[in-house]
Amino acid sequence: MPTDRPCALVADSLDPDQLKPLRDLGVEILDRAGISAEQLALEIGPCQALLVRSRTKVTPDLLARAPALRVIGRAGTGVDNIDIEAATRSGVVVMNVPGGNAVAAAEHTIALMTALARSVPQAAASLRAGRWDRKLYQGTELTGKTLGVVGLGRIGREVAYRARGMRMRVLAYDPLTTAEVAEDLGIELRPLDELVKEIDFLTLHVPLSDATRHLVDAGLLASAKPGLRVLNVARGGIVDEAALLESIEAGHVAGAALDVFESEPPEGSALVAHPAVISTPHLGASTAEAQAGVAHAVASQVGRYLTEGVIENAVNVVGLDPALREQVQPWADLARRLGWLASALSGDGIHQVDLTMVGEIASSCPQEALTTEVLMGLLNRFAGDRVNPVNAALFAEERGIRLSSAQRPAHKSFQSLLRVQVQHGDGSLNLAGTLFGTHNLRVVRAFGFNIDAIPEGPMLWCANRDAPGIIGHLGTVLADEGINIANMSVGRNSETGEALAVLNLDAEPSDTALAALTSCDGIHWVRLVT
Ligand code: NAD
Ligand code: MLT
Image (cartoon, rainbow, N blue to C red):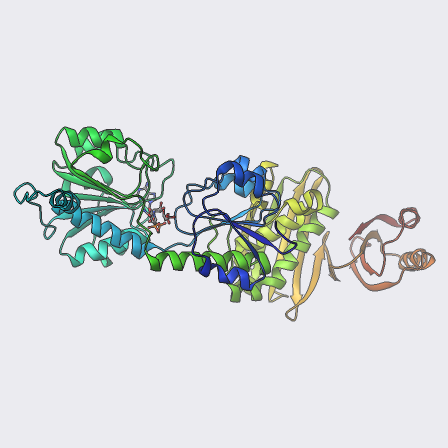
């Protein structure tokens, strides 16, 4: 049973030695490799982390049974077995290890391509069965042939380098790759429907998503060059297996090499049984090197998130590089406090939040990270710990709060400034803050007044007429309650004769004291913000 140390449940087979980074950080490991979905739902409750490969399905139901869960570590690349939206909604970070098995998957693709070209598994099986079928297994050469790579990411590129080394011509389709990048790789880009007309081998290296499900379907295969050979070392479901089998049986597609299947294992699959098809049981990433690498990487990423809050390789939240994180931290604190103040000082019905980063901070701090901090401050007042960096934007969106962020190059008085403006039911509120030195947080503008307020501890905000005796009255009422004023800032507007006083107090005044303050002639409103 888990102890009071953070606990990570390992649901799929990961090399236990590679989980050392988690153990070193004091995280308890529950090794439940191969656990059934039902048993996992029973055991996940107290665990803060879940480590998986592709076998375990992380569903909304499982997440509902995991109230303590903070992070899911995927020891590999594809995250299609995890319901990312549900995890985000639950505030759970999902991390993978991008590129951790790219070489393994690329080498397996090349192994399958050469095996497919020369019918190596079929010939080996025939010889083992006592036959000597030299004629039957005459193959085709790769040199001079054209390979079509769909998905020119980490694995696709590794495959392309190797194919070029084997003197193949390489064409590719990837909507996110520019012609310049492709040219540097010695590859020509083509739209998918044109690509299939020119190629002898097709290899897929895209994630499975709604956009890529059945990307290779009957229509695409029918328009392909006759004799095409198809490789899938990406994900089952990207190829329509029924359409592929039909095309092979019709003699249009010459053969296929498959590592992944629509259903795994592909029990009773006529495609797997077909003599022109060679298959492996999802072995793309199964090398000693890749498995050690991804297990070690995911263990250290998950451990650092649980113990230090460092987010690396998350697929549902922006993480910061550790050096940048240290530099950004005081600004993140300021952004969160401005968000908190904005919600405490403005009216109900906040529907728009605008963050402007002015001066040096605009170029040194990631906009999205600070926007998330403002939102967390703003929403935490209402939703408490349920809002975290993972789900803050979604939480706001679901409540109809629009966000915008902008950058301005310079400010006449401050080297760097954060401005937060919120629109609410009754109007809008503008706040601005900065850092004095490297760590002293200050609010320097609020309600149109220039101030110098410290956003910490109990703060009393008071809007009043700029007249003698008001500050004295504040001091007297607080003194009557035995409350010390630690710091005070007053902003004045000589044109309107109005002022804003912001006091840091050693303790929170009672409701009676607050009522006594408000009843004073010349004080328009007071608000206590803690
Ligand atoms: P990656 O994110 O580096 O690259 C994916 C590429 O696909 C990107 O360049 C993207 O622009 C492109 N892409 C996305 N949608 C596309 C579309 N509709 N058409 C064309 N291109 C599209 O990912 P990667 O590390 O190269 O891995 C690719 C996939 O391989 C993973 O998502 C995973 O499912 C699979 N994989 C399988 C094994 C295995 O054991 N068989 C091992 C590792 C990875
Ligand atoms: C991956 O996406 O990384 C692979 O499918 C590897 C795996 O988990 O087996």
